[in-house]
Image (cartoon, rainbow, N blue to C red; front, top):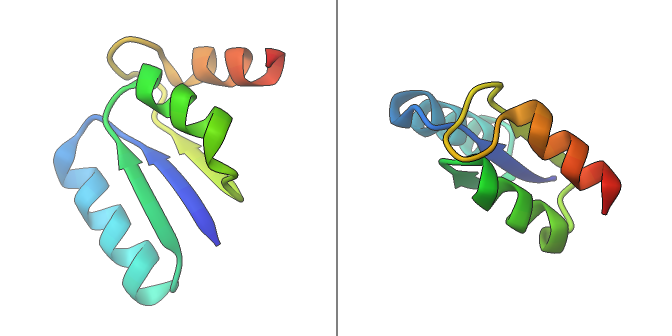
Length: 70
């Protein structure tokens, strides 16, 4: 599964990526802000997008709204 993981806390994103890739066998792309999450989501063909609620530039809910409107 191709996963986009948007999280601005480096510790959380590192652990999540490690677990999802090594234990789950997934392909994970990590981004640290909402703007980058939206850009990647629109062109990346991800199976799953996991968003932090509070991120720099755009919040998780705002990313969802803008992604839905595209």
